[in-house]
Amino acid sequence: MEVIIAPEPELSTLVADAIERLVREDPSPVLGLATGSSPLSVYDELTKRHEQDGLSFAKVRAFMLDEYVGLPASHPQSYHNVIDTEFASRVDFAKGAVQGPDGTAEDLRAASAEYDHAIAEAGGVDLQILGIGTDGHLAFNEPGSSLSSRTRVKTLARQTRIDNARFFDDDVDAVPQHCLTQGLGTILEARHLMLIATGGHKAEAVHQMVEGPVSSMWPATVLQMHPHVTILVDEEAASRLQLGDYYRHIYANKLEGQRL
Image 1 (cartoon, one colour):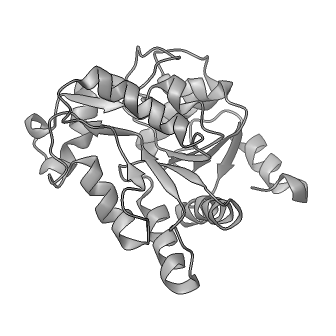
Image 2 (cartoon, one colour):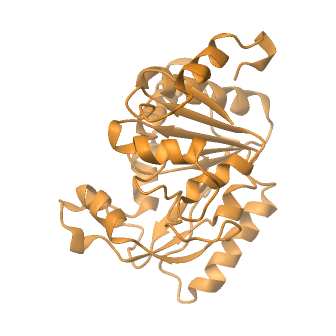
Image 3 (cartoon, rainbow, N blue to C red):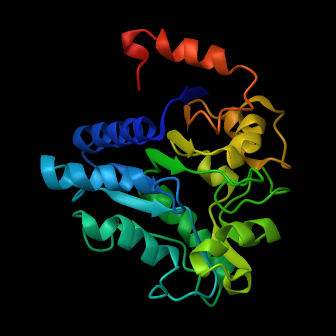
């Protein structure tokens, strides 16, 4: 696990750099897209590179982490609509190239299995963007989730709904209670995981994720088991890290071939 501590604009640039290299060098790249506030500046940076430098996503496939159950794709806060608004429609993805779990499916269990199958059929995710919840949840894998879980229906914790109420006019009751989410086991199959966290409210979750024991109580700690994880945090989110100075030293003294 690599930990990079830097100001937020630099974090977004580093993620965008990694995605640009993948998109330009791989003939059929597969991205994993996250919603929430953490990746928005990354999507803005990639859109700028598309408009100004000709970075094309025409051959890229992408899979979303999760979706609310019961919200139609046209709902402003459905993740299908959010990803389309914030990123997909701003660049040149081919029609149908960006997929998400079907939260309106009649058979949610079958839809979950079909989604995992679709990811596998695409060759798996090359680079997955992630955020982390204040309680350590990853995607919508709440505390107590199986560390080997697959895409499935989850009931959202009260804290998660409170955190997401800002997207629903601060109305907690308007936030759906259920979702379809990639499981932790599904996420771990991506070849490179890049997680962005900013702000002091994420500090404890970041500390547990990076330095705590692997535990379902803090689902993001499962990332310690992955061979290629990059954690990108600002100073506030890094404030609880006991080895913060060490992580800064490592990053400042990497060999050229070890850079992202």
